[in-house]
Image 1 (cartoon, rainbow, N blue to C red):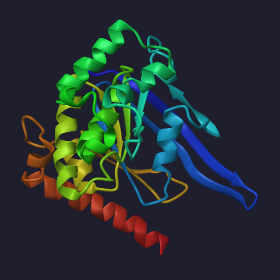
Image 2: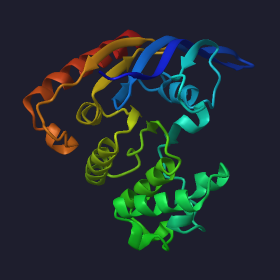
Image 3: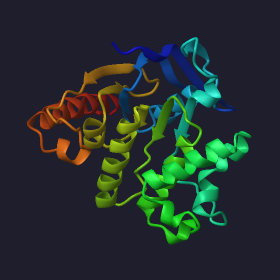
Length: 259
């Protein structure tokens, strides 16, 4: 039986400006199981990225608590955050970009450098380690960004629309490739996406957020009859359409309530 690796209890958050208060999140609660791939969808501007930033420890919730297991690392080292764009430094080689997080956290050692070299080999980038970002395709740069995140060996990966900057065909191929590798590594993932097909094909469970201030409106468990859970192949399975229609209706109802 899987165990909880992360628990959120009644998380609320508001932004404050001179114009006043904007409530972003209201009483968000859920558990994340070890090895689970969780997707979060919702209307634009509903606070999905805000929620990830709170989980990552970049923002402090207005109220509520986040609980990690007692034997877990601290929040900073337990969680890896991969943003929408790769944010690679053009003047650093691929290898130098991959070890950047280790340098910042003073964790660069023979052991961690060997792990980065292993990841570059695993992600088929070893031959490009001395190249520069402008010599790589968009998909390859996203893999480097993931390696930079994985190099710190986080327990949980936060993915904030990591494929949105890619063209559609590349996006399908890269998400398929990265998802298979993440699952093979047994990582626990929270994915933010606007793409319902992506959410269904990649995840084990989907949370639907309401309009701002966001609450969890709906929860959908994904059970696809697909032995290896290839994201592209999953889209051809009959159950896929059923899940898509459920999510579309939930989000459409939410959109209608805004208008």
